[in-house]
Image 1 (cartoon, rainbow, N blue to C red):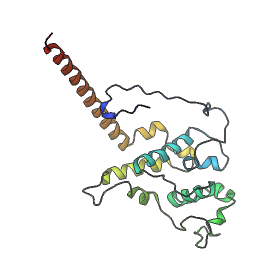
Image 2: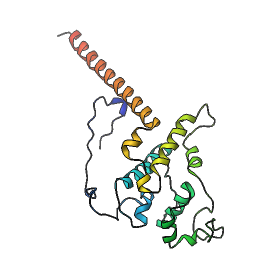
Image 3: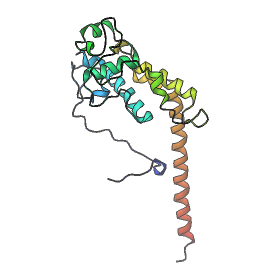
Image 4: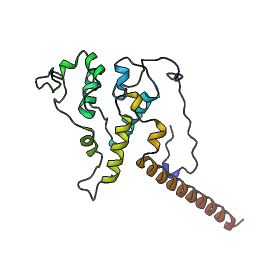
Length: 216
């Protein structure tokens, strides 16, 4: 396999392939083969998969790329562990899901508080989204952090919209692209693409010029 730095790519053609698990949006499907840490909650509770399920997976993937670790963590986690991680990160589930979650007693008491004597490998307290986002700043202080406060605030707004429990209330892809951080990334990517093209053109012309000056 050949790898090439993005700095060396002036013109790229992206190919999306392998649609073996894909299906049309109008098909009824309540089971996916998405990795468990990226699976939308409605799938765990046997509700219909939709484009909103992909939005949830995209949000988890986005966090993992930027944060260099999964949003929902665990050592060999099962479905119940991931649901507990969702509650820890995003707050309590919708009532219909909470009531139908058979193994919630492994993590929670009857009043919904965390079970301190749990035998599951899970911390019995909340680690909300904004706390999990702090690890993504990657710096000793605000001056050296890779992401600034404004960027982190914009990213949190985007992720919260994409990680809304109710699929009907979850941000669509079109809506997500309109968020401030996405617009900023697109502008930055556009500038970088123009710079790469200019550099590639200049390098090509420089080579042509050298060939013209080379003695025959």
